[in-house]
Amino acid sequence: MSDSTPSNDPIGELAKALAGVADNAHSLDEIAAWLRSQPGVTSVELGDYLLKSNPPQRDFLVECTRKDGSSVRKVLNIYVLAGEKFQFNCVRDP
Image (tube, rainbow, N blue to C red):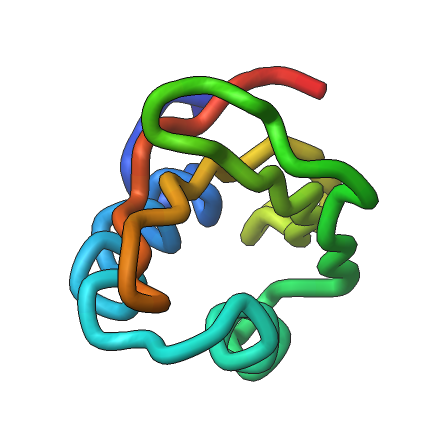
């Protein structure tokens, strides 16, 4: 099975759901807790620094187990908006 197939892409599935979660979150800790609670997620780390861009950004390093037992690590990038609002931005390689 190819790594790009939806059934073997746990990060892609997380990213789809994360858009709505980030929009409704009141803190980065809330987003981290949601990520940790998802099936197949084995590790969640919030980056130590704020990327000073417009808007500012924070990174979560997330590791998941695929259905075939292999693991995948990706960075999930979140915009930090005014008023303690958040928006999912992208998935990228660490």
